[in-house]
Image (tube, rainbow, N blue to C red):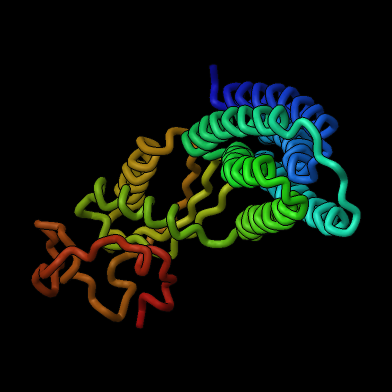
Length: 331
C-alpha cells in the first residue's frame, strides 16, 4: 500500500470510530443533562466534522501534479488543519457560553455515573487514535494527520480532568462544579485551536521551518563531499509531504559543467536516501573564488592545485550558514 492510500485509510478509520464515540457522548448528555458532558460531546462533533474535512483533504492532496498545480495539491492539508483549528476554537467558545448559562440557569443532573463511564472510555479510545494518527502523520509528513492526532490527544487530556471533576460532582453534589468544568475546558480547547491555527498559518505563508532546516543540515554534514566547499542560501517549501529545496552549492572554480553536475547528483542522492522521492532539489552553483573572503581555509579538498592558504578547519553546515544568502556570505 502506498503512502497516500495508507494515510487515507488511517483517517477513514478515525472518522468512523469518532462517529461512534459522538453517539455515545450524546447519549451520555441526554442521560445526565451535565454541561460538563456536553463539553465533551460538542468537541466530538468538531472531531467528526474535522475528520471528514481531513479525509477529503488527504484524498485531494494525493492527486498528481497537473498544469494548474505544478507543485501538486499538498497544501490542501494545511487548509484542512486550519479549518480544524477554527472549528476547535468555535467549539470552545460554545462550551464557555453553555457553562456561563448553567451558572444562572442550573439543571438537575441525573445518572452521572453512567455518563462518567462513557466519557472515560471515549477518552481512552481518543488517545489511542490520536497516538496512531500522529505516528503515521510524522512518518509520512502529513500535517492533516498530525493536527488531527494532536487534537484527539488533547481531547484525552481534557477528558482526564473532566472525569476527575465529574467524580467530585458525583460525590459532593455541588452544582456549580459542572459549570466550572465547562469554563475551564472550554478555555483549554480554545488554546488548542489557536495553537493549531498558528502553526498551519505559518506553513501556508511558507515560514521557515528551523527544525526541518537543522535536520537537512545534519544530513548534509553526514554525506558531505570534499568538493562541497559551502552550501548556503537554502530555502525549503513544503507541499503536503513533499519538500522543494533550493540552495547554492559552492564548488571549486575550475570544475567544468559535467563535474558540477555530478556533484549536484551526489547532493540530490544524499537527500533522497533520507526523504526518498519526496524531495525536489534545485541547485545554483557558485565558484569558490566568487567570494572576497578566500574559502581555502575551510575547504577540505586534499589535492587542489590552486590552493592559496592552508586548510584549517572544515566549516560545518549549520542553520546559520545554511540559510545565508550570497550578500551575507561576502561580509
